[in-house]
Image (cartoon, rainbow, N blue to C red; front, side):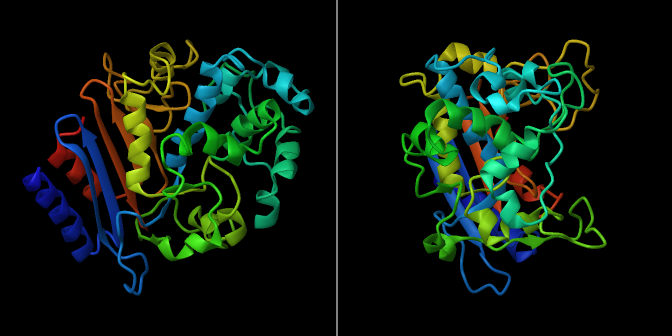
Length: 355
């Protein structure tokens, strides 16, 4: 294990030294090695705050793994089912074809409600009732269940509001009760970051290769990193995109999903959640992008016949949580220099023989 740790630390430190990364964390678990947790680099561009294993990074869509798991645990207990219609929990959602949307459609990204509802200010975007009301006035782009398209931002409200209505709790409480508290993640993962935790938070830096390019007139939500630079957004619960976590905490979720002795999800539901859910007449691209082949909320990696063997989710700019069911390994990575160049992450996975 000491050789592995040294090799991984060298990869991280070389990436920081070459300025491929500003700061980053890597966490890995296997039955053979146990848990490894490493960090290198800086939380800020002035290089005054060093990254530690308990530092916090915006992880963007990687946080969807936690929201997804919370919803699946509620379904696992039979409080609702995959066939439950959203309108049965959220009556105001009715109209314009939305009555057909089921919880499975939400988890599989087949609702047709993938466009961001209108928001003029960060304060509007952080206003949960307002954004839910605007989403509940939008017409699906197609009949729900007939096409897949990634619900990059709307996943927060599509998933969270039915569970809020069901439980009578704010969605933030649902996430804590279902995932963060049971797995000891409450100090390492936030959907609504308290100001007291700001000294642990990494500043984001944009690499020149990041896509899409900067717009002519940046707004509070475009480019995407502007979102979590807004205090009101950081303090809100918008788990489709505003998760803040460290690699160590993310690893705990992956470990729990692989634990057959004390299953966090039933084996039957986990199998379903990591099987492809895609309309039968929607062709699978020959070179699918990472963020279009879904199980139930989780992205599916690897090619047939092993698709779904590896599942999890990545985040804008390079964070990632991946779980390998066959090899029983978990990989988590966080970073604050947002880039399309993921050489560091892939070098770590190669050194770990992940996947």
